[in-house]
Image 1 (cartoon, rainbow, N blue to C red):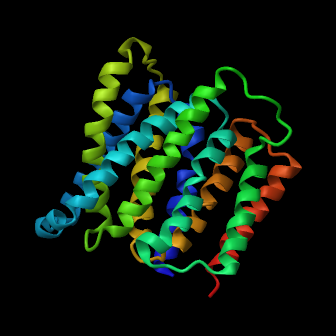
Image 2 (image 1 turned 45 degrees about the horizontal axis):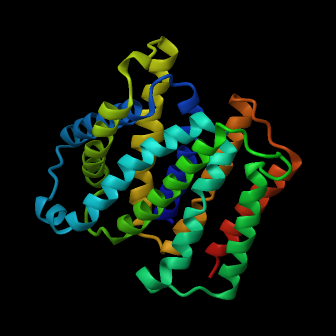
Image 3 (image 1 turned 180 degrees about the vertical axis):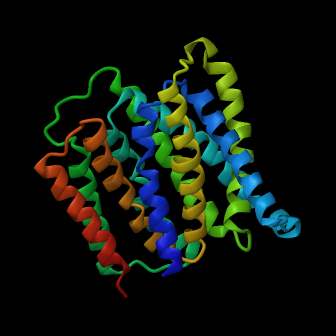
Length: 284
């Protein structure tokens, strides 16, 4: 139960990313690099306060999974931030959460987890719920600028698959140490993108922007990833994938409350289907 509570808390906090991103007027590459750097400093301070020394032997043994997962995180932060600029939070979320479906389908190959009929039904129900909660049904054709957002969101989904699979393979590395190391590696991917693509002149400083930058870095990124990784270590991959659907529910509820991207009746039904399928999938 401890692992589930940690994972669920992380998934719900992930749902704040879209809202906080809209409130943070920074280019995506620079924003991602700053988020990672702030989180690394935060985790270093936590380790110093706890007087906890990372086990370098265990970390070294897991580098073959820490490095690709960290690179996936760095790219994920960039593509996700870009997608929220060019399309709505619900539409981006729809694309993101193709990832758990892919992970469940791949779980027999990577984790020797069987897929039974109940899980197939839950997966299908979750897919219907995801489509409904995205609001794409009856929303008409995409606007020209939205195509870039959708492409970025699909790239985000691919990075998410990598994050989930590689993290499940990591063994014996504490949640704080794991997250900090992955963020250090992710920073290696984010910095070149920020230098090449982003224009520092596009940065707009304001008290509100700085506040949401800190919230985005420390809450939506640092705390959520730490809880997410601590939880995923002790859970079956299929269960973790299905519980990931708490994030789009959280994202859409928050976008309705704060960004006024109101949820229709169909989106509410979609949220119920997502939540129901996640709960039923946990039952043995």
